Image 1: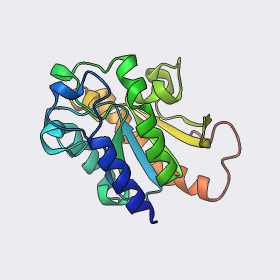
Image 2: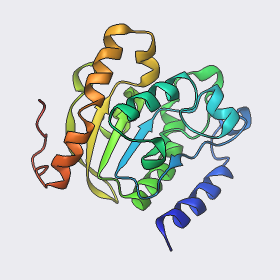
Image 3: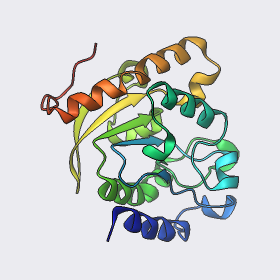
Image 4: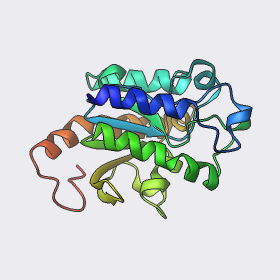
Length: 203
C-alpha cells in the first residue's frame, strides 16, 4: 500500500476520533495536509477557527505567512506535510492541555511513521515541548537537534517560533524568517549525512 493510501486511511480514522473533551466543541478534526512523500514535516500546536471550519491546517493569517515563507525557499505546501500536535480546536483558541496533547500523540506518531520525514520542523512551544521537553523556545529557536522518538527511532528536529506569534511582533517575525531560510541548507546537510552529531551547524 502506498504512503498516501496509508495516510488517507489513518486520517479517516482520525476524523472519527472522539477520545478527548475537545471533539464535542469543535466542528471537525483537522488531521493534516500535504504530501505523504514529504521530506519536511511541519508540526504546529492546534487548529484555530479557520482550520476548524475548513478541516485544513494553517489556512488563517498564520497559514498565509507560512505559505509566504515556503515560497522564499521555493517550496509549496503541497510538497511538505503540515500537521498539529492537537487535531481539534481548543475552545476560544486557548492552549491545548497536556492531557489533550497526550491523547492526540498516537495519531501524530502514526503520521510520522508513515511519512518518514527527513526533517521535522516544530512551530511554536507546544510542538517543541512534545519532542524536546524542558526547553525554552526563546533559546532553542533556530537550533537543529537529533532526538530519539520511541517506536520510530532517531529523528532530526528544527525548532522555530510559531508563525502566529511572529505575525504581530516585528523582531520575532524577522527572526522566524531568518531561521526559516536555513531549512534548505539543513536538509542538504541531512541528505549528505553530515547529521551524525547531536547538533548540526548553526551558521
